Structure formats: structure tokens, C-alpha cells
Image (cartoon, rainbow over all chains, first blue to last red):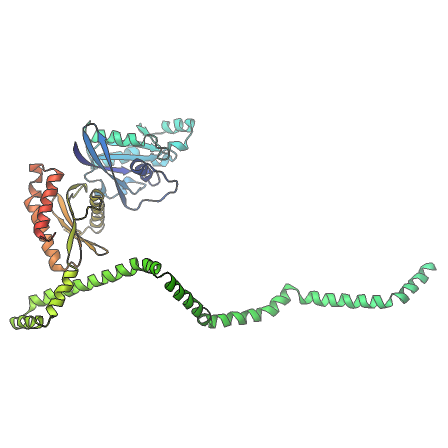
Length: 164
Length: 273
């Protein structure tokens, strides 16, 4: 089977759960304590598509209030982006449009996925209210704690990156 | 009338008790005064202070002996545990120190060889007859540099496109990513025109980086790396880039093919591998 490597970059404000999502996806684990990421953390997981083995190199970048503060070089050569925000903190999804414009300008034609994380912390009603506040539609509502939709976001991105 | 008589009788029969009671009351008052917190603290303070001063001045004498005995006993009873605990710290420190000293020594020897005149060369040969040169050679051989890992990495993405390993213990994909992040960070932070990170030292390992246009090659070397070795290795990595990486895109080489080329190139550089 053919094997290829793809660089995936996780971006989003601090404390939105980028590291927890990666940890859940790579190690199937979740920890309640919050440890801030310093600089960048790199993990790896192999995704198997029907006729292709994709070696995902995941760059979990330390969160910044504004994504423009992340060193540009960390985005270079990325094949896919996952933009993570916290469903319980509107300030983390207020600037999605601007942040995405910036990323698209840096990485034209690179697929991206929006993931609203920490779904487990909201009730049905709160969730409905929060969704109505999104500046742009969000494809995935995830929970690193329960594992909901975590595998799916990486699988979907892998398909987009490999045009499958 | 009856009351008066009763009072008089009381005072006659109970006179002694009344006096005793008055005396007791006085004594209680005096005692109460003496055991008040203020009085106790007034009396105890000088005693406590004196004891504290005594302990302070005799601390080493009082505890030193006991501690010494305890440490000696611990070492005697658990020699292996103590060695296990100290070795990772002391062993690495000693190894690193010896390596740094050997590198300095090797650099000095190289410098002397470069600067030398012919009669000095004869002198060196002469000293060699007495085993001096041989000792140096043995020391250098003991810490001979060895390439442990080699990698070819995309400058931008940090993705690995070829690798060589002598042990196969590292996850080279993750190392390649991390090295790229560190390299990008340093180069972004200092923004020196034309500046490139070309070496990282970690413990006794040296990570030597040769940059080319789109890729960079990395060699992780153990042992004593002197300036001559580093320059020679950098030139060799550059040669690899020239020979193979320049036409990588046109030939569309797979990771496996690049790894084979790198393995061959590194073994050409150091036939002992």
C-alpha cells in the first residue's frame, strides 16, 4: 500500500482544547488538568484509507489570542488546518472569519476544518443558543473528553488532503 | 437580738477559719498573677532565647555527627541504590566534561599540526616513539564521533523525506518536525540575514544541520566532534544535497529511495558504520 506524509496544524485560542483533541485522537486519552503548550508539540498518527496509508504529522501550536501572533513558519508546508474553538467561550470564536482569512492568505487552497470543542459542557439549550452566535457555520462539534467527533475531524481532513 | 448573739458566736468559733481563708485568697491572687501569660512569657523568653542561641552556635556539632553517621550507614547498606541515584547525574556530567575537554584537545592538536614547522613534525614523531602520540590517538579513538541518525527534511513543512539510522530507536518523523520547529523558531527570533541554525548540542549528542534550498540534511553524532570533523561532515552533507536533492523533484524520488541514497552516502563518509 502506498504511504504518504501530511502535515496537519491545529490552531485556535489558548485553552480551547487543541492538545486534548490531539491526545484523544493519538492516544485515546483525556486528562482534566490544563497544561499550556509551550511553542509547539508534534505528534504522529497513521490513518488508513482504503488504498492509502497517510502518516499524519500533527503540529499542535501554542494558542494565541490572535492567530497572527503564531510564527508564520509553523504554518509553512501545512497540508491541512484544524481551527479549534471553545463552545463555552464566545471570545474564542468571535474572530474566526478574520483568523481564517489570515490562514487562507498564508496557505491558499489548503483544506481546513472548524471544530467547536467542549460540547460535553453544554446542555441542549445552551448549545442551540451558542450555535446561533457563530459568525460562520461550523462543521463539527467535538468533545475531547468523551471523544465525540474527534476521529471524524481527522478522518474528514485526511480525505480532503488526499482528495478522496 | 438573737442575730447579734449568733454573729458574735460565729466570730468567736470561726475566727481561725476566717483568717485562713483570707490568707488563702491572698495566696491565690499572688499565684494567679504569677501564672498569667505575660508573666510566663517574661520568664520563659530569656531561657528560650538562650537555648536557641546555643543550638544555633552548635548546629553543625549537634547534627553533623548524626547526619554523618546516617549517610555512612545509608551508603554502607544501600551502595547500589546510591550509585543508581547518583550515576545519571554524575555520569553524564563526567562524560560531557571529558568529551568537551577531548574536543578542545583535538582542536588544539589540529591547530598545532596546521601551524607546525618540519622540525616540529620530526620532534612529534620522536615523541611518538615514547608512546605519547599513541596515547592521544587512543583517547581520541575512545570518543570517536559516530553518526547515529541521518535525516533529509523539507525546510518548510518539516516532513521527513529520507532517513538513516544506526539503532532505529527514534521516531524520526516526530524528530524531523520538532527540529524544524526549533530551527524556525530560532531563525524567526533572531532574523539575522543569511543566518541558519547549523548545530544543536544535547548532552553528548551533536545535531549537525546542513541547509540547502528546499531541504535540509541532519546528522545526529555521538562522541567528540571537533571543528575539523564538523566541517568535513557539513561538506559531505552539502555534497549529498548537490548530488541528489537538487534533482529530487524532477526524479520524483520516494522516501525509501532517498533513504537508500542517504544510507549509502553516510557509509561512504564513515566506512566503519
